[in-house]
Amino acid sequence: METLAMHISNGIIDGPVAAVFAALALAVLTFCVLRGRRDLDDRLAPMAGLVAAFIFAVQMLNFPIFTAGVSGHLLGGALAALLVGPWVGALCVAVVLVVQALVFGDGGVAMLGLNITNMALLGTAAAYLLIALLLRVLPRTPTGLGITAFVSALVSVVVASQGFVLEYWLGGTTDLGGNLAGLSGTMAGVHLFIGIGEGLITATTVVTVAKVRPDLVYALRALKPAVPAPAVPVAGGAR
Image (cartoon, rainbow, N blue to C red; front, side):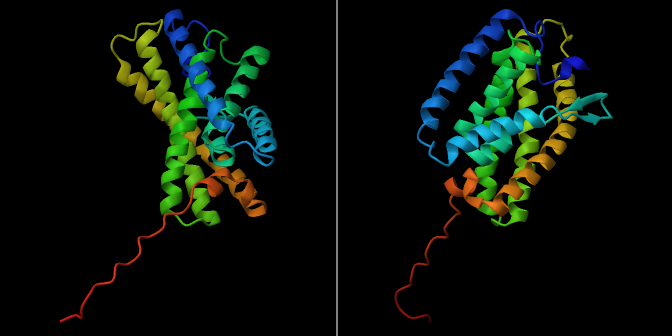
């Protein structure tokens, strides 16, 4: 079950596939840097540092998944997307993953591109797409924001786990005997429970920040509520 961890260890995926995803991750992160510069201001820059530090600290807290015999922790994609946006958020998660790999050996250094692709890029992107959708249909109350945070966090974790399934299909070092669907189902099931924990942490954190300083929640500032179309007057009288 250790091989089902989102932090992929060295040797799980072969070298050529790992190199391709490392190049992909580097290219996307470069774009995030260029795009994120437009968002950075006196408010977002320090918030990005706080978000990265918070994700790093909370990832040290594991919660057990008794049905699978493993433990999970916060990935942080949805939390970062809500507080600092998708571009800066992806960079925050990527920085955390780099420090974990180089300093703590959490995930193989050779697999760093794979881990960044799954957790920093896929997870954050999936979360922000859901956030953008839900904040247009749900009321911008603590309850609406909490639901948005919970659902986006849960889905982002499952999407990130399926990124690993794709990578294993492309270059897994152990033959599964054609049972890729079984791997996908197992990963989705385990990370569904992890996503519930992530959703609760994300919702609690974001709602708390929004109650004190709603201007610090990027999603509330950047995503404007849907404006209903104005009514078109009908010429002439009704019959």
